[in-house]
Length: 315
Image (tube, rainbow, N blue to C red; front, side):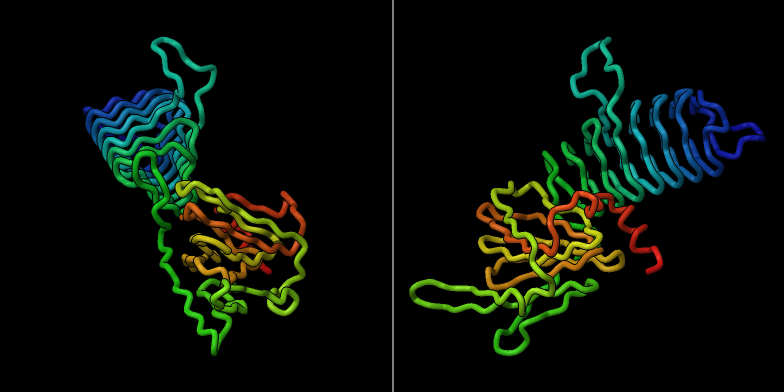
């Protein structure tokens, strides 16, 4: 048992080489766990049996680490992360016996993310805030915030709390449908069905709620890849999938919805300060994007937590 001045619990069979001050109050460390001297562990964590934690490891508050997990040098774990039984982390892309890199790649598990049992995470990756890695997944690329990934190699299968919102536009009545995310809407464009071929047409000045300054299109995106996963400070966009299909996740910080674009006569309006992620591209997908401004790298925010901080600021 820990000495009386310790504010955490340690099972008598645990080996804790770090200083007592490196383990936060309320943390519980169970049998046969081994923690090396340089490790830092936050408050109210639960470190289960047979866990090994190396020196250059920093663990936040309220983290759960289930049995059979090894955390190697270079791993950073933020608050409220869950790591399932026997999840595996690697920290050397080209491991050789008795040969070590000058510096181990940094692997980061963002706040609230979860790693399923027996999942494997390759070195130097970031698992985004509140992301969910499925059991047995092999993660070879960064995982965006709120994404759900599974498989080997892991691919995005959905987004946490993002229910698909059906696009239901009746051309004879309402041509615009508001989505359940602030400011986002879908608009039916004029179209003509003809034996000679179908035609869609857009009166830009009447149907686009901004002056178009730039047009680009995205195509040949592998199905397992994503595009987007960012927010714009001032840019507005109007998206049309002119061929194939694309799924768009929109998020205003309180509501998150998925919208499938699979009709070349339907457009999706995205105002600024709406997080968007585009994925599930069909093999033949061609996505046309009309933008309100010229390209400006400073207009992008690519970190979800920074986005949440931005929208929390008084307007």
